[in-house]
Length: 120
Image 1 (tube, rainbow, N blue to C red):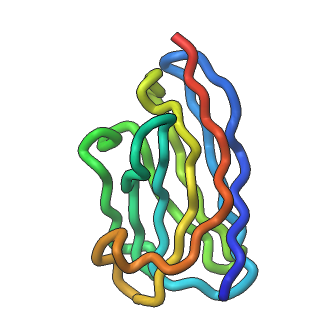
Image 2 (cartoon, one colour):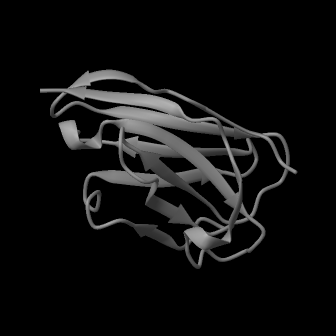
């Protein structure tokens, strides 16, 4: 099973930006990001197909977050702009065994997460 390691989290003020990275130990197909805030269930943030052609976002982050990948580097990214306090959460990278992203239910590998804190 592929190992996923997230990085890039931190503390940022409202309106600021962060870029998360996820390094994979091997070849991955469709991937994505999820997040979990304290006291809440883990929720889908963004997904991307193996080729990077198709991208999907939760309504709460559309227009502010951008998912991308570099398959040569085996790295997934999440550019987060215009951050809000409600974006505060642990962000997890995930991978599926499918070429095309169909939904978070396809994910079968997850990283340990990186904390993102947005101060007001």
